Length: 220
Ligand code: GLN
Image 1 (cartoon, rainbow, N blue to C red):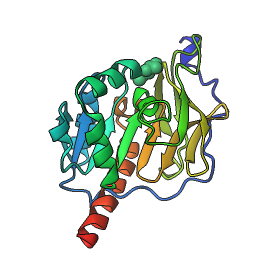
Image 2: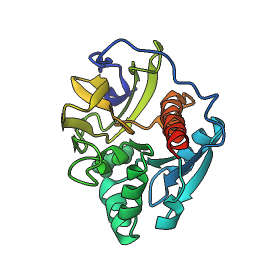
Image 3: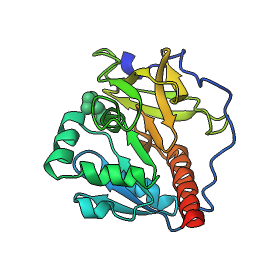
Image 4: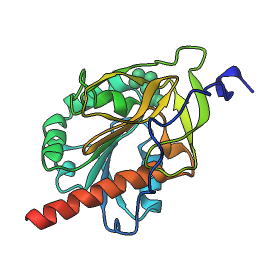
């Protein structure tokens, strides 16, 4: 066992007691886009499908029309940002957000959502924040809103949230740094929730997408 994969992150804890588990039974029929510019989009699609959603790989702006939610996966944030620009996806992602639809950013996706990139969240992420020694590790993390059982979290050259505004809720921290954050319709994790069998973070995201869909149906 390497030092990286040890349980040395004893300081990882939720910022508040964990609440109720997200409900997925109302989420049938959700169509969730997964940005397929780069990274492990196929694993996100598998997890979403296992929860009853229809995942759609997103490579062009029109594929963002009519989505109930969008996942920006991990990978390399510079590459993903360049692909978003090259493929003209930014206006379509903004339009998706303006429709009130949720976005989940994981690892590099957390960086892409921050104030230095798309600016959808009032956050500043620090890239490769855990340093060379802990460039890849796993730990059990309690996450606010996912129930009392900790979530197995796989960190790979992960960021953390360096600064955030008052509207950002911290759902879990590691070594005193936020690693799961939510701001309204936006959810971001520093780790890779698609790489384990525990799908509770995706279930939370799908519950957010269901709530957004129900809001639109009431209005429209
Ligand atoms: N270190 C990568 C970046 O800065 C993110 C790594 C990941 O997504 N697993 O973009």
